[in-house]
Length: 249
Image (cartoon, rainbow, N blue to C red; front, top):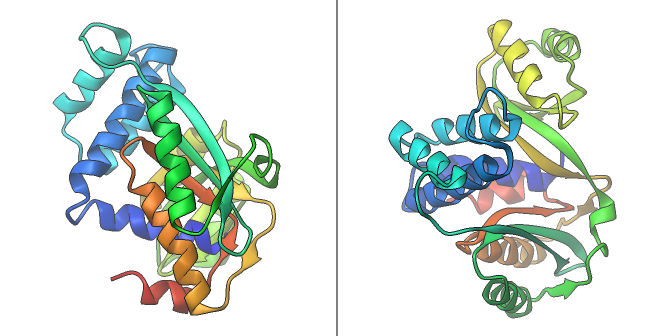
């Protein structure tokens, strides 16, 4: 698993604890609305909504807030209509970046994302320029400690693909269509699941071993991730645990 994935999970956990909590809520709720609009308001019949519902609960979003978002998505309540727009570009050092947004104003969001790339030493790219370097995967984070031989046995039996260490926890990769069933199976084995979501995983990573260069890359990633319309940011950098740890506080 790349350094980017480790950084993303660290940011996710911090977001639920600090002043970014409200922004985390808003982004997840927007995802719930879109999932309900595209596939209906019944989580049992809408896999995307079921995943977003669970993600919202993991972030401690209140049930009534989630239910209102579902009703806005299905049209039972009035609300803004969001569309999904993806941007591709490069961070300093030629790092490939993919930005997934949900916006009610494509022109505004486009201008602001381009500005964030330019302001932070990156550049926007044409559609398809970097997306070929990523695969869509399910990623499940589970709590350690766990005997790794036992975990591998459980992962394979559950239908997962592989796992890697992430500090004291583990990140398990799955086929994107199997993330829900693998999650349920792992919980059945008694594994504590911390999160489960769809993500983009880089086929190959670029190692960033200079702290100054790493700081530039993470500054751009964080600036984009902080934008209200941005739902996910993916990149193919690999930064060591030691360097990442120096930026966590």
